[in-house]
Image 1 (tube, rainbow, N blue to C red):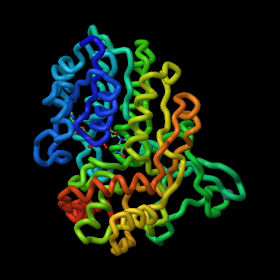
Image 2: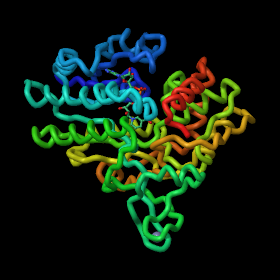
Image 3: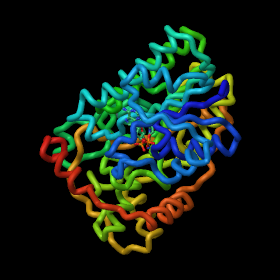
Image 4: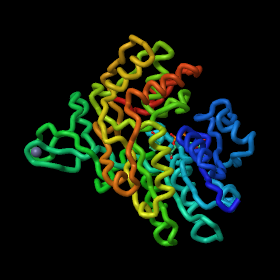
Length: 378
Ligand SMILES: NC(=O)c1ccc[n+]([C@@H]2O[C@H](COP(=O)([O-])OP(=O)(O)OC[C@H]3O[C@@H](n4cnc5c(N)ncnc54)[C@H](O)[C@@H]3O)[C@@H](O)[C@H]2O)c1
Ligand SMILES: [Zn+2]
C-alpha cells in the first residue's frame, strides 16, 4: 500500500470523478469522507463509489477531517493527498461561521500538523482552492486601464446598478481575465476558509519540502453535483428547478458572468498536477477562460432539457456576491500543459442527461428563505 492516493471528500461531486480517473490509471485509492447528509441525504455512499468499494478498488474511511486520529489512519502509507473535503456553500457559510472554519481551516490545519510533526510518506499534496478567494474579478477601465475592483457598495446595488465602475473616473468597467496575481479579496466565510486552506498548505509544503499545489477551481459543473443541496453550484440548482417545473431564480439582472468548467477538465487538471514537479509551491487557476452570463447558463440548461420555462429575474442581490470572474489560465497552460476540453454546450448536455435520471427534490426555496431570514438577500 506504499503508493496509495488519499482523496478526501472522495464521495463528493469532484472527488468521486477524480477517484474514477485515478482508478483508470491503475492507482490504489483511499477515500476519507464523512458522508455529510447535506451532500448525501440518504446517509449512504453514492452507488458509483460503493461499486468501487465492493470490488476492493477503493478503501473507504468514513470519518471527519476535524478528527486527528481519523487523519492519522487515513494517511497511513499514503504517497499523494488530494484534499477536497470541505463544507461547500457560500451563503450558508455566512451564518454557520464556526462550522465552516472548523471543517475547512481547522480540518486542514490538523492534516498539516501531522505532516509537520509525525512520520509519513506524503510526497505530494494537492489542495482544492477556489475562485471565490478573488472576490470581484479583474477589471479594466476604458479610460484609465486595469484596476483591482473593490466589492460593490451596498448603496450602488440598492439602486439596481450592478456593474463594476472605475474607482478613478466612475466609468463602466470591462471585466478582464483574472490572473493568480490578483490580490485575493474574499467576501464570504467560505472564501476566507478556502484562502486559509490554500495558504496553509502552500506554507507547510514549502517549509517541509512537500511539493504542494493549490488548484483554484472556477465554477465546476457536471453529473453527480448534489441536486438536493441548495447551496451547491448554480448549474445544478437551475437544473433541479427546471426539472421540478420551477423557474430558475436569477439574482441581480442575469448579466453577471462566471467561468463554468466541466468536471472532466477538473479531473484532468488534478492528474496533471500530480505528475508535474514544476507546479510545486504554486496556486493555479483552473477554468476555461471563457465568460458565460448566468442568464446564458439558464438558457443553455433549459434548451438541453427541452424546457420552455424562462428564468425569473428576482431583482434582488445577495450580500457579498461578485459581478464577474473569469479565469486567466495562462499559468496552468504553461506549468501543467492544461487545456480545457469540454465546450459549455456539450458539458451542459452531459449534466442534463444525468439530471434527468435523478429525483431532484427542489429545496432551493427553503435555502432562499433561509438567506432572506438572515438578511443576506436584499
Ligand atoms: N464545485 C465547485 O464548483 C467548486 C469550486 C471551487 C472549489 N471547490 C472545492 O472543491 C472541493 C470539492 O467540492 P465538491 O463540489 O465536490 O463538493 P461536495 O460537497 O460534493 O463534496 C465534498 C465532500 O466532502 C465531504 N465532507 C464534508 N465535510 C467533511 C468532513 N468534516 N470530514 C470529511 N469529509 C467531509 C462531504 O461529505 C462531501 O462528500 C471543495 O474543497 C470545494 O471547496 C468546488
Ligand atoms: Zn477610469
